[in-house]
Length: 158
Image (cartoon, rainbow, N blue to C red; front, side, top):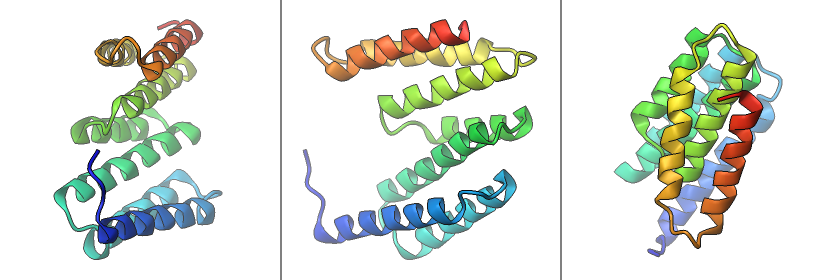
């Protein structure tokens, strides 16, 4: 695995610290306030901290993932929740664990909102399962996430 340079490590720590500070400071904020604060943080970090294209994309992904999770936690309606989901899908996933996280949260959101058509959530779960099956059979991650995905399907009926 490629080792990060000292400056890249420092930038990574600076981003993590900024995230942590915002999480603590905004824990009681309404979603709309939280979303504005995360977008402001994204603009600030893109201007002053992150330098490479990879870091920029990862920062955007992390912000999108955080907002998606917060939209679920705040039980946002589809226009808001769907917007956060589409942003993640446009940016792509850093790894299979993040793909799994998004698919499961979407399935749980659909369970909370039975008026919403769950076909897209089911498709996302199926797609995540296909990605997990591509991992080596000996992978503990593969087995653990496949079992957890099966449990989530049973829980949500998807």
